[in-house]
Image (cartoon, rainbow, N blue to C red; front, top):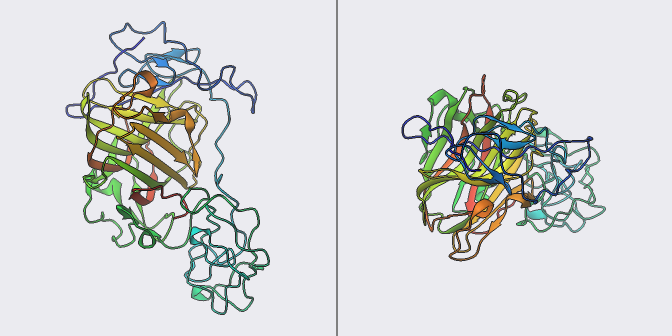
Length: 424
């Protein structure tokens, strides 16, 4: 039954979300019930005046605290075990190229031709000196270069490094058109200048230790700054330092995003990540929007959001925190912070009251919402999307204590009116 979470410190509503934990009966076994089946109502917990009900994956209560029995939330955290389905795979959008210039080099396209957008080369030769691409390690999101597209043996990529051994393009890397996601899109230089974006932040022009123009810090300065120790593309990324809890993020205006937009960012979490205690969870927000919902007033719309269980697995969720109780819709606990870069995409559309989320080019359909115009939904499909947003926030904000703290990086943050994909 619905219950409320504890309140946060003044002016900050600490949102927690915990959903049913799925039990693995064998490493590859499926759950005994389908993922979209209604979940049992929490029982044995607090009265209807507090807590959370996990009915159909919906979060109808406040912040998570407490325990569950049999994997159903009864005051908060789950003991139902690790979600079935195993760890999510990476690079699901296409095979990484084994030839071409090393990632980060300044010359020599991989894949035997122009890589960005998956353009098929005729003949596939780089030509003497190589073309100006940066060998991004096979971005998928398009058709692999033509067979026989061997890099010229005399061509060298920038900085004197030669094109990859043999230089041959990979086969089988097809993953749809360049604006339909797919592939890792990692390595090489920033692609922010190559597309038509409402916003694209590469952090490349910002000095190490600073923050980009137009953004403001939310959190301790040394824990929210541009760094050069990791990057999805180029040389710089936003680094979020370790602290037990609280915000480490950047905020900017979102007034130009409109009623509908697509978003994309790359994120990486240092391993090993902090783990919650037994029967507990850690709810962390990576990207969110602030706006005024049709029926709920001012609220934070968490569009890249995770909840990690004590087994080290996490779910993704759509989560909304108004002044009252939060609500949302979560996936199975099929994912893991693995130390790799991942591509997260989202789409919100207030005109159709819809939300979609993708990771590494694959949609997480369990958390999709599509209510239709003028319908704000209920239960697990409640949307309450506003026609405009005031602020956009990126970074890391974990609401439960997670000592010694998460360390994470964010790069190539983009907003557009159409899907951006991971390869662009």
